[in-house]
Image (cartoon, rainbow, N blue to C red; front, side, top):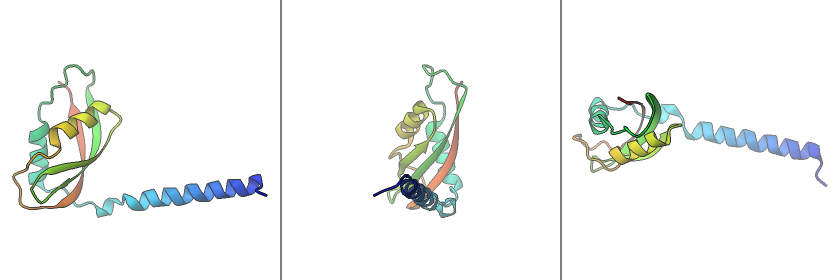
Length: 116
């Protein structure tokens, strides 16, 4: 029969294994630095967002994306607490073409959106 002590040990072991898996899966060393031409292309695409109906001053996000063989941005994940920033970045960037050579890489970029 399972005792409370064994259940607690099993739960603690599960939490430890899951937290280790998450930390290994998103290792920042695996991310390449974003080339300047990609960064400037993203800035041009999200420049002057129309956010008149949203009340905020500034919002931050971490953008996980890749540039595919067709030089298109493919948004993988937007880490933010502001749902409108998630929607904005996906709408403005997903499958938009960049004027770059074939990069075919995954990148991570910190983005700050300012309203006004």
